[in-house]
Every structure is written in structure tokens, then in C-alpha cells.
Length: 155
Image (cartoon, rainbow, N blue to C red):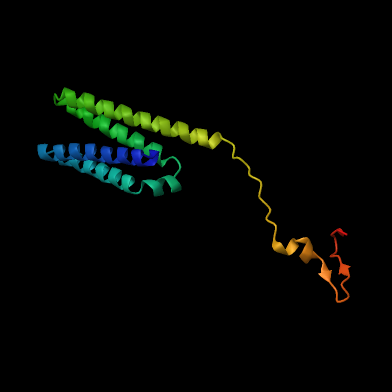
């Protein structure tokens, strides 16, 4: 599986986790928090859908979104801890650590590719059939060869 597809799945997973917490807040009756979490879930899903375009146009956006996802998941986990759901808190804290790790790895790879010198390749000169020896010399009616200017005679 390609690295980009794996990171795209990570954004989808963050969207699902945030969506589930937003729906939980909506059921409890905390509508303002639910609105924020549902908005973040929609943003994370849009990032997952447009992941390749975002990587091409914005260099560090991937890192920023991973950090945003990590803090969102960690904050929702801390709210679970306050309500007494310890196992959900530990699960979400582990997921947040994973997203922080994704952000650090992405930042390290961006710096590594930024510092690597590009390999310079020599342009390959293609020889056209017009520059063959047979066609460089113009033949005159008496079969004498008149060389072109700047080329050596091959006789």
C-alpha cells in the first residue's frame, strides 16, 4: 500500500473518531461542542478526499492537519476521562500519540527531501538524420563534393 493512501486512511479514521464524539455530544445535549466536533469531522473528511491535491499545493499542510487531528482527539479523550470513561480515554490518547508521530515523521521527511541535492542529469543530445555525413555534403552535378562550412572533409 502506498504511503499516501495510508495517510489518507489516517485522515478518514480521524474524521470517524471526531464524528463519533460529535454525535455523542449531540446525544448528551451539548450542542455547541457537538457543532465544533462535527465541523472538524467534516474538515478531516474533506482533507482525506482532497489529499493528493493538498500535498501538491501546500507543502506543510499535512503536518498541520495531523497536529490538529491529534489535539482534537486528545481533547475529546480528556473529556471522556472527566465523565469516567477511562478505557476510551486511554484508547484516544494512544490514537493522539499515533497522530503526533505521523506529524513528526511527515515533518522529518519533508526536511530530508528539502535538504537533499537534486541529481543533475545531462541532457542527451539526439543526432538528427540531417547531420549524417552523407547529407552534410552537398553533391554538385559533376560529382565533386562541396563540404559545408565548419565541417571537416572526410576524404
